[in-house]
Image (cartoon, rainbow, N blue to C red):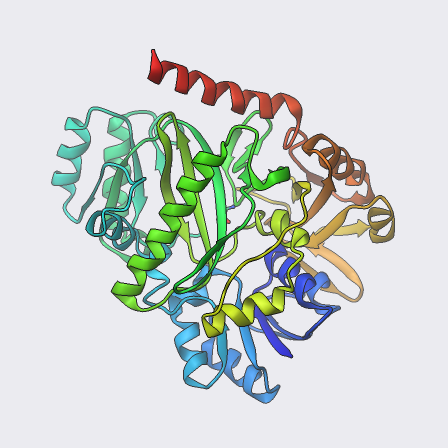
Length: 440
Ligand code: GLY
C-alpha cells in the first residue's frame, strides 16, 4: 500500500518506522530528516502547503495519508485530500477544533456533561477578564484560544508571578490575537500529576494506548522553561506508577464521551487523539486535547505495537476499529537538544551519530528537527533526536536509554532524570499526599 506521511519530526519518524515493513512510504517534510528520508520517497516542502501535498500524493498514486502535526490539520488538509479522493488518518478541520479552538473543546464538555472538566471562562474583553482573575479564589492558567506551537499557556506560580502578571498576559493575548483569536481562556490551575493518554479513533470506537508521562520542563528537577517535551516514560500494563487502573479507565471514558460528542457536533473524529490529563486527588481532569500523536509520547507507544499499524489506520478510515495490542514492556524516551534550547538552541552544528552502536545496545533512535546535507546531520534550534530504551521495567528501559547517550556527539544536553527511580518516587509521593489530604 502507498502511504503518505506528512510531517518532519521524530513523531513522524516513528510513524514511518511503524509502517515501513508493509508499505511503500512517501513523505512531505520541511527539512531533510535522515530517519524518514532513508525509508521513503520524499519531497521537501511546507507541510501546510495543501496544494503541494495534494499534487505529490496524486502524482504518486498515494492511497492513504497520515497527518503528523496539528498545523496542517488546522488548515484543513484532511478535507482537502479527501476531496481529491485520498483517504486520511487525521480529523477534518472542524473535528480538529478539539485542539485548535480551546473554547470549542471546553464548551463540548459543558454541553455534553462530560466529566473531568474544570472551571473556565472565555473572554474577549480585557476588563471582564481582569475582574474574573481578581475575584477567582484560586490561581489561574491563561491560554490563547488557538494554536501557539506549545508556547502560549502561562500558569500563575510558574510562568506568571501573581494575578497582576496574569492580567497583563491576558491583555496581551487579546490585544495581539495570540493563536489567531482576540480572546483568552482563563482556567483554574489544577494540582496533581500530568499524564498523557493517546488513542485511535474511527469516529465511533476509541481504542486507548498505554499511558505515558512527558517532562515538559527543560532542566532536571522539573526546572526551567516549558519545551516541546524533553522525554517520557511508560510502564508495563499500560499504567503509570502513580496511575491506577480505575483512573486510567476514567480517562478512557472521558475520551470516549468526547468522540461521541464531537461526532454530533462536527461529524466523526478519525485519527489519533491525545488527551493531556491532570491526575488530581479526586481523579483525572482534562487539561487539553491534541488532534495528533504526542511528541515524544508517540515514541513510547508505537515501538510496542503488535497489531499491524497499517490495519489500524485502514480501520480508522473505514470505521471498523476494534483493538490494538501492545507489547507488555516499559519504555523511556529522552530527547537530545542543542545547548541553549528552548530559547536559543544552537543551530547549524554538525552531529556525529553512531547509529550502529546505538542499535547494538538495543536502543531505538528517532531523528527530530535536524537537517541532512551531504551525508552530514545538522542541528536546528529545536529538539535534535530522541533515544528510546525498552525493558521489563522502567529502570531497565532507562538504563538502556542512558547507555547510548554517549554515541551522539555534539553540543547537546538531555534530562538525565527522566525515568529515574527518584523522580518517579516524587510523583508517587505527590499523588499520595494529595489523596491523603482529600480524605483527612
Ligand atoms: N508532548 C507534548 C505534545 O505532544 O504536545
